[in-house]
Image (cartoon, rainbow, N blue to C red; front, side, top):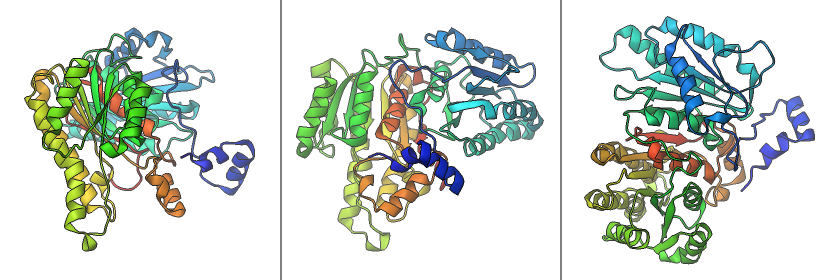
Length: 453
């Protein structure tokens, strides 16, 4: 379903009318297309005065495979440069006063940020052992980043990479996260801070096909977000098994044929679902590397009107089935080659939503599950992470009453809804070998919801 309002206010007459009436003008988001550049203009790398870490990040971008098409600069020119992105390296700040110089330098170039541009911060996590000054400076970056994301316009976004004690600038996942945030693949990710916690992960032979040779399973893949995930993983080189209930068999087969994958009709709440998924992937494709838990249902009702059937059905599909399948995966020797689990959570599981206590319980449960499962996979260089979508244009959201739908679309910093492909891009990134240093985390794909966390 398209957003007519966004198209209207970005057209000739519509743009003029919206400007005169003071109406919001959401920007057209820069999404991935084949052969699209990583950034729509030169990339400026800023840092604290005499920062060697900013120099290292600039060199990292220039030396990476595929980075040859980037124009990376360490100083703003005096001309009318339209910056495609600005990377602000704050990993060496030790006092709040250290933030002034780089942030004021960023201030001076923000008006020259190209439409669909990116701002990315790189900082370190505040730790309990830090001095009060160091902790204040590091936590201050969080507030800066989230506030800046709410100021940008024309489809531009701001996101941050946070290094924990186990990671450094040379960690493969730092470059992977940086490329993701700079790229059109992160179109609907805004105001997010993603933690890199270790040096695990390996850079792909090709950044265009980072999943070459990998076998992926996607549940709930017959339509909507699940089908988009399957298509995106296949585009990135994976051999994909699409899973859905028998009632969706025709749509499921169409998706499988489109991406040259295989279809598995399965009720994921069945006791042997995990074993069935593993057996199919191994017998048909020779292994199993990535499992995307996308299947989910809603049965919305105010808690005062909730019935046992409504509660139990949502929890069974949305979290209990994932837990059971993961147990089978963790016990299988087939799932030991730097495996990836990516689960679909929701902003409802973070901020809550009226009439969704059952759904929010299941999606909050997903967040807790990946946080606890991630460490269990670390010995085999595996990860478990979650993607939490906000308002996404799907068949389900198209049935929301018009006025409610319009309000929901605008309640984020980008002032529009996301598309299924936006969720799929985030899933594909977390499923990639280079994202091995990101574990037990949640990445929101919500355009920076203005309500809730």
